[in-house]
Length: 73
Image (cartoon, rainbow, N blue to C red; front, side):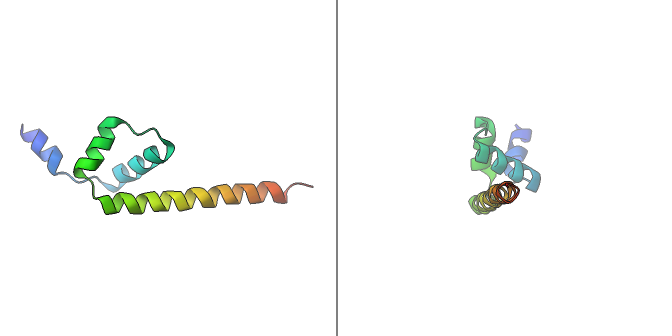
């Protein structure tokens, strides 16, 4: 019972936040982790993390496409 209260009061650490955003971005987030995020996490932190992930993903795809197209003869 005490451990459950301590777990509920914990906020996710940066590593947990990053892993949750990555997993959600690729569509492989487990239900257990999703429930943990919605229970303990700050919505603003996940929104910012999601936006950063999206921007980095778009930039990396654009870079890869640019490199591939510039190497074509």
